[in-house]
Length: 256
Image (cartoon, rainbow, N blue to C red; front, side, top):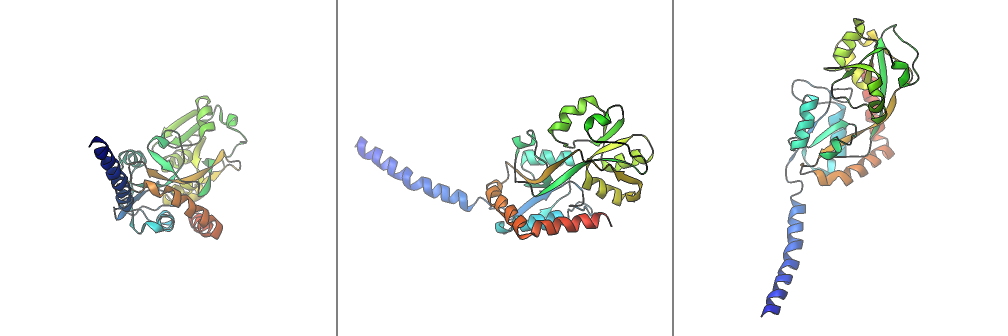
């Protein structure tokens, strides 16, 4: 009787476990809405609380196999990161990898390279080839910005103030309250265009670095299992020229 009970138990588990796995897989993407956020830049516009533009177009293309509605929502950057930790949003569509962020989100492969640059007020350029050239100058960066490990390692040698956003950086530069700002070139372009100061700034020719922009998916999102497919879609998008077409259109629009 004991042998029969053990056999029956093993038989029951052998039948039930595949059914459970099948049930989990069929419900993996049970929510019919993918919640996406991104930092305002040339990739993302923010009319009110909504998010639109390239980032939504690209997200729709890359997540097309989910057959869900893409809902773009604007959130202040620090709140967006908190929502990713809590699973309140599924995807940040424009983000750089850091070890800290990797604790609560998984990253796609990069879909575009973004230069980190030095921005100055028009006519206020200076020689720059390496970070050491910034020592002794007053710098600015956006609060919470990720500028790469090499910059973080060197940052204690710099006199750099963190401010609210790139619009404030541009304003302080034009008022000669700082020597330079540092950050993503395309975020600077977006903020300069929006504030009407595109002709009041310029970029030093040598970039600080170039990093890959990625999709981040919250580890608490029901769509976390889509990451492998997303990476395949990004590779296909590069091969077909789709991603380059979308990126080029955004860059051209940002400078007009």
